[in-house]
Length: 195
Image (cartoon, rainbow, N blue to C red; front, side, top):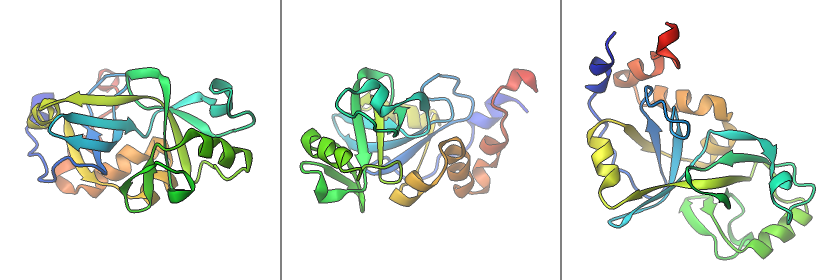
């Protein structure tokens, strides 16, 4: 099957917004965005900010952040922008002051002193928090242009699907939920040259 046939899939009607997920089209070969699932933490006329949810690295948080000794929480690549900066999402709500609710029960950012204290008390776990190096960003109208080219499908997020789905299965699970129109995306091989 030709790639240009796959490109003609009609985009779903859901628009990008804070708290929605972006699913990359299957033949995007980019290191950061190949089969990526991105949580949009911010989306407005000036641009968008998101975190890639399904790209774990081989290091734990304690290995890269001195403030978190003994924190054996997996670390993820959040995107290509500011890759030396730490970002996080969590389900701890008001326990971390200054955090921003993205969708019901899911928050991003917040006061790092609160995060350190919760880490010390062993209240930060892989089941309620996730840490990222870098983020994904788009300028004004950039995402709309990419959506017109069918580079992304947009779907709804939930804290449960983000924290309870294994990262290596997340893209495929969400693509299947989009329905039969996206069946070709699901079937497209990771490396078409080996097919």
